[in-house]
Length: 133
Image (cartoon, rainbow, N blue to C red; front, side):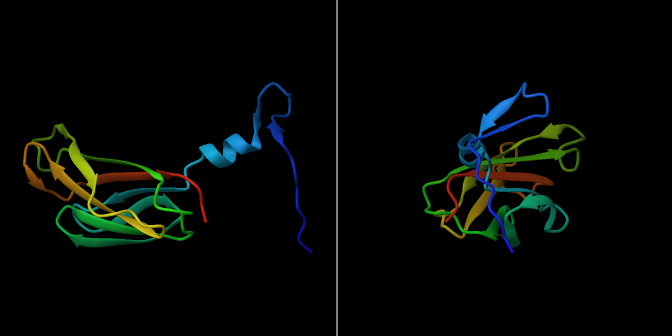
């Protein structure tokens, strides 16, 4: 038999730190992924990601395990490479949502400033904040 625990506030064992459960629900990321596209499309770690698709150089899509409530969610993206093509220096790329976000996933395009073209970075990150359906 399933049971429900209903609380308004969570606190630590010493009651020194507490937080409203509404902050946890609204403030937590609903999707995150850290993945590699440089040598192969592989996921280092993720939450609420069902799949990663390599659409071509510098172009990837992810599908969510649990859909978002609407497509008005906030998405933060980032890329980077350590060494590899950039003479062993840290290089950062520009990232953008390649097409309209949907409730079931998003598309992510990456390109290097020094390359001025699409590029498959070794380190890519997407974080999504919003409401789940």
